[in-house]
Image 1 (cartoon, helix red, strand yellow):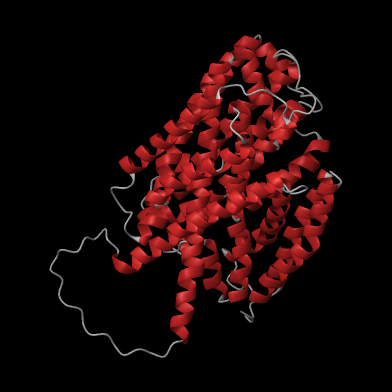
Image 2: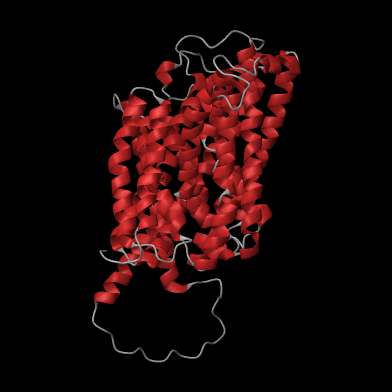
Length: 515
């Protein structure tokens, strides 16, 4: 999305936009300090996995909110407008299944690696392979970076449209909002604010969609647009199912499997709460695209005013429909919903990146150095405790690691903003190109990841060379498929990468080498 492609006047004033951004920031900081800072923030386990005691009813909404990218808020309406009910079905179902799969994978990893922090950490322990560990870190880090970049750029473009605040100005502001409260207490801040943000998103949808339907003429107006402009009401239509459906199914499931924010929540939940939390998260997420898709149906029906002006980005169809039917006050509500979706995705990515950096880079590097160093003489016995030690205080070692975690949040946020600026300023470079890399690397490691949880005879060579071959074969096809705008080519590439990376893992027996 580019602001240059949207020749529309701002729908609200810049002053109102800045005011809303400021109020939102203060509110999220208040929530964080009120419900998170008072406990568990001085230990590494508290900062990274909330001391492994979060509950299903609190974490389930956080899981849903973490999965509500700008895409879920914008693309769901665009898909309904263009492809109708079939497009909405094949957008929503894979998103729900991508979260629901963790009702199985989440409990499984806790049984096999109960005190872990990240999935790459688990893979390294299973295969004792430095090279596989390094290969895994690429898609895992990139996924978090992409979440920040995409939400800063795509979401910022919509905020810029609504308020007139220049996109280069608003992008770092949006990232900074999520960063300031996530720095306070890490994952716990993310979970608590996500819970509140999802409540706001649901309230906003309730305040927007039913009045919009009524203003357009009621349910007949929705029914008139169920086929979209170029789609169908047949959710099993092969033209959509075998192209868009396969691409979204493989891509979204693969991206959650390589999404550290979900593995992090699996490690943070109480063991008996994991399946329930992810099932609740999947169901809550479905409400968002299903609710917002109604705006796309109204736009396609023609009863919400004229269709989009030429040159307008189709992902803006939802907010423009709201503006035509209900006016400026409801646009402000839409912007608040957008801010909640953007922030929940970015704060989860920041927290996940901090865990990857601290555990898989800093601590891993320190352990390698310790293993290579000569054995140190035995330390003298510790003096008896006077009972004054605070059990919530992890001591100097934890404090140092938490500093690394916070530094990682700042670093990934800065890099995300830099890439967003690249998408804005550099000709021919955009978020779509970042997605190409993300899809390729995610699909290439998803099969070995699942098999690592179930196969005790998984071979290190099979995992490494399977991933390398999958990226080498599939990535050029993904790029070509997007270049020629062929969803079927992208679908074939996605399935091919899973097959190429998974087949060696199934055929090769254990015989560790390398690393």
